[in-house]
Image (cartoon, rainbow, N blue to C red; front, side, top):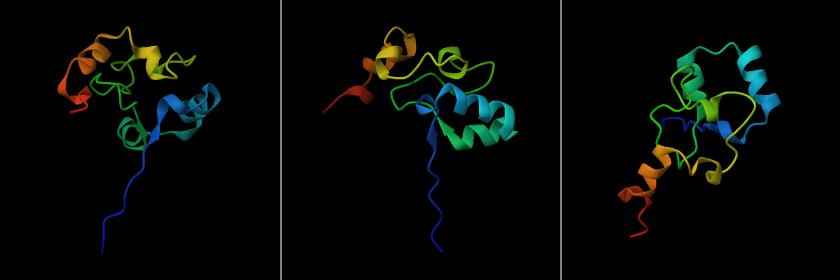
Length: 89
C-alpha cells in the first residue's frame, strides 16, 4: 500500500485569527505543530517555527512575515540568497 502524502500548511499564509486559533484551541504538542505547519520555502532559519527558539517575526503575533520581501533583512535569507540553493542553473 502506498504511503500517504502529507501536505503541510504554510504558517505565513495564515491570518492572525487562524494562527491564534491554532495556538489557543488546537492543543497541538510541538512535534505535532512542526509536522502540520511549514515555514516558507525561502526561509533557511533552522526550525523557524519552533516556539521560543524559532523566528519571532514568523511565529509571533501580529503577523510580520507575509511575503518573501518581508524576510530580505534576515541573515538567514541572505545566506540562502548566496547559496547554491538560489541558483537557477
